[in-house]
Length: 196
Image (cartoon, rainbow, N blue to C red; front, side, top):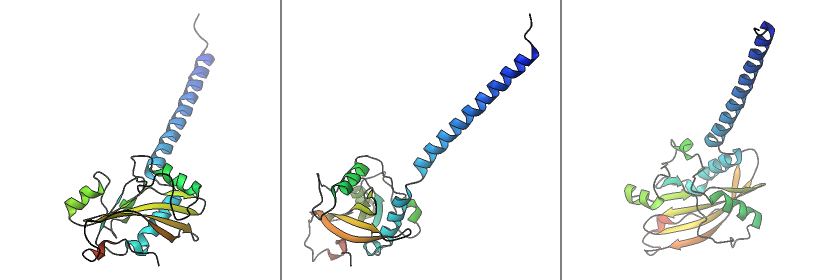
């Protein structure tokens, strides 16, 4: 006995509906994955922008890259950073993935990608390289490690506070490590400048 025409049309409409719902779910998942890969969290973008506009980056004689790093610290920062902020910093940097979108600043700064280590870039470019770690953020505070690679190298923790809108103010810095092969008088330009 042949199926009734209404039943066939009804099952076709139901299958079309399921296919449409499946398409919407796949499109949403694709958009979600793309947005996570393409866009850093807003706070991270604002912090990066504030950091690169700060006095620490006003000199244009070094290249800049993003490299996850704990700044050679095992479990704490000496300068009174909260345990929660350091934990967020540690979590952000317990990865091999460089998350900062530095390519947005290529017109103002010399940005190099994370395909090589900062020391490899220093040797290739014959100029100092500043590596910015991934950023730990808790509420209105952020912690980042800056590492300058050159003939002598050093790492520094920098604490920033949210100061309104999209601006984060540098409030504290602390030397984390130093590898000095020359005397300071011979290479004064390789010091990470102090926050004023």
